[in-house]
Amino acid sequence: MNQNISYEDIYEMCKQHMHSYVLVETTDGVKTDGIITGLDEENVYLAVPMSQNSPAAPGDPNVNPNQFGRYPFPGYGPGFGFYPPRRFRRLVIPLTFLAALSLLPWY
Image (cartoon, rainbow, N blue to C red; front, side, top):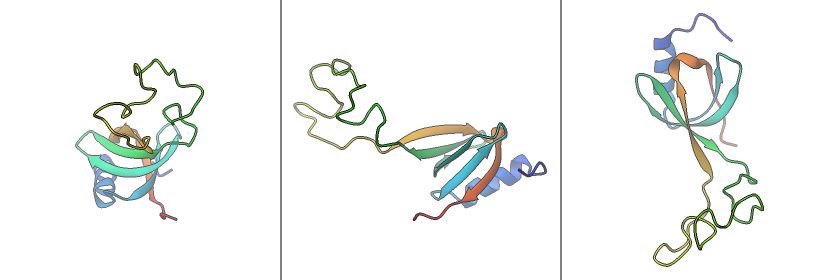
């Protein structure tokens, strides 16, 4: 972890890698991979892949079927049709908490 990286350097690095698959490390040592989907003066927005056994996945026994009314998952039911479960969740990280950013390959 490089202690000499400034806020402006992190901002420019995020801006340069917009819509790229990256690994970010926060000042407390947490590492997260995801796609940079947005950036403003205070935050970086990531689309983080969800695991296959997340609570929102269809068929998961941890999901309360009454949570969404008559239909077990959002998107089911009259007028809604069917759409697959989400594969990404949104994560907002303040730029001041970023310690490092690395570009990752897609494969």
